Length: 355
Image 1 (cartoon, rainbow, N blue to C red):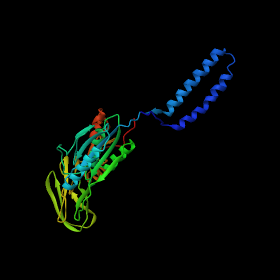
Image 2 (image 1 turned 120 degrees about the vertical axis):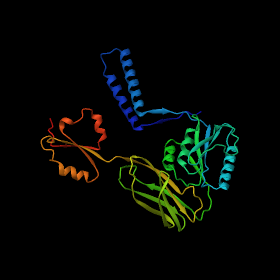
Image 3 (image 1 turned 180 degrees about the vertical axis):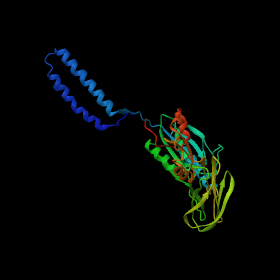
Image 4 (image 1 turned 90 degrees about the horizontal axis):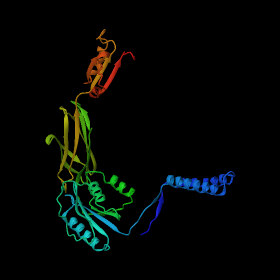
């Protein structure tokens, strides 16, 4: 095994140039005896050298010729059966060509990822036997599980089989993270012809709103052909909007305006697109969640509330006209427990003495 090293902060090695200074200082130590002079020089050089090396962070790393390969297979509904069989054959052939000490493991994924076979040498594998949800494509989940499945002491490589129709997660972020760790990801595209294909790219909506605050839901749909379609919006699995639309080839943007979620709770939104010209319906939906909180609540502390309670009436009326609740108190009514302030979105001090 080779034992290379790397310097994390190489510019710190320039500090080695100060070592001659210690030698110069040593030559001026006339008052010490010869033995003590040499001991002082050696001790100072050793301490300085260790400090410089610690700042430079020299790291020794053991390398090995043992290779571990994780095959990550996209088996979502969007991948046709012939392409899945093609991927199985490629994996079996690749395992057969690996070295005797090399290890191989299998990860399969759709909406979620499952470790079908842990990394091991002499792997005999025909096809996956694990159960998982295949009604979406989450490439990032497959890569994350592939990373977790690696043995510690080995070189690492992931081979990703996919058609690339991602509609969950962000595979580019995961791939960058793996690249930063020095783990290569080889992509084997599962190619097939689809003249007619429609898929939901994303939905855009606010994650948090107040009661009775209308929101707009934006939907981005990609289509390879011009085709009529129906855009359906479900809230808590109940159909709220059903809108006929005309999809153009390329990216389409639609907006569902003024959607009201009146009750304080967590709402599930789901958008489905049903097109006349389409190949796979697995990628025709997207979901999200919106948290609805109570009306905005403001605490107004009025310095002259006891003597002139109507002083801020116009100001309060203006705020309340915007759908904001206002609680008015005098300074001596301010709660001592500061945690009670957390129930307010804002606290306003009006004509309050700083003392």
